[in-house]
Length: 101
Figure 1 (cartoon, helix red, strand yellow):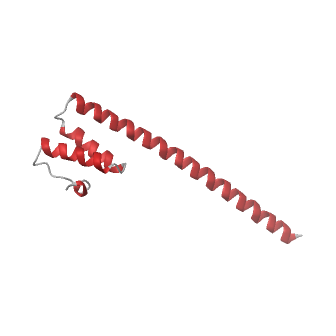
Figure 2: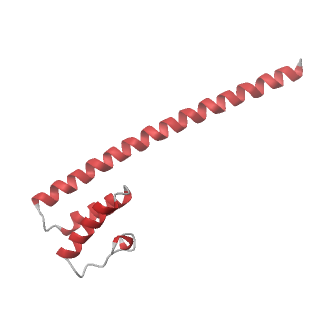
Figure 3: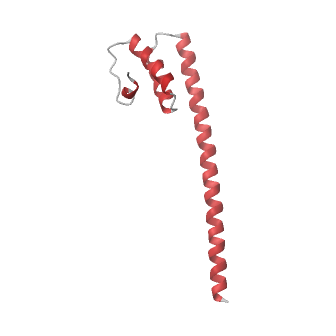
């Protein structure tokens, strides 16, 4: 009888761990998706700012960093190119250096 109680306890524990893991993973994925959406909205605002003030170098820097973090290398390179057109002496940070040709 004692062995069955232990076995049932272990099965219940495994079920709880599985359900808990699923819940936490799902919650993490939803949170991650919300962060990505907020990040994209932020990039849209920087894009709008470049249209209003096309010589504002730092807006292009933010876009280059943002697109690089999203893995959109061509857009990141395009914005970094624009930064260097506006300010050729701007020291490229190590984070953006891999985007240089």
